[in-house]
Length: 317
Image: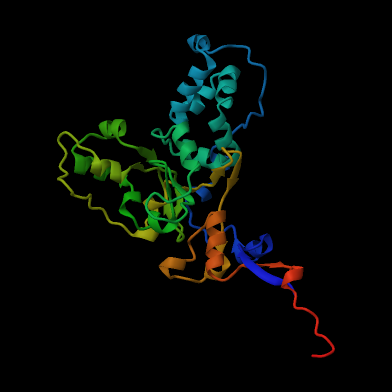
């Protein structure tokens, strides 16, 4: 009889049986803002041999040009890419940009659509290589575009740091003009549309500033005292502004060559317990360990060796 010699992680079949990739709940984040129509990307379909250069930039070594491009904020980088075919080929030669565009074009579309000018290509790529939420221990399957932080559902709907401040409140609490705030603070211009799982309608763009950057900053003439917060009505899971700079994001593996969007657990599908909340998403390693803790495992068998086998009974027995 085969012997049990160990317990392995769930098999591929068990992983498929006990997980699912996409929730049926529509949260109306930037994922649901029709970004492909609003912000089409050419994805190098117009690849021609460049006929014109890019002025003085051509005199620099390619390594220096790459370092310059990767440090540009993404709206500026895309604007440069549209200058001519040579500019396009230079930007497309940047490995980090190619991997972002290949694996998560909607993240790029979201950044361009809400004009997130405090976010550069290097920072985005390095964030996509990580997995953890910036606030808790769980997989951060969303990106908070304002400051390029990974965040999970529970944190972006409840943590005050992910509740952006409107321009009116920002000007009131800092004593600064909006043009000065835009120069100093991460900000975006939200898209009109529906937000939250209740589909609350925002009819126009709203200028939003990152709350944490504002509170932590030291402003000349600011009315904020030490440790003081910005008072603003927060409806949390039903607050549209919490969703206006949020988009799903995969994690990149193998130096950006592959991407994974994570797994939900079918066993936790109805759970509201914080430890097994149905909104928690896992990386592949995370879901395998989670299932193993819940008893979903594969037993490892082996045939006994000759020395392990009992001797046959003799006729005298």
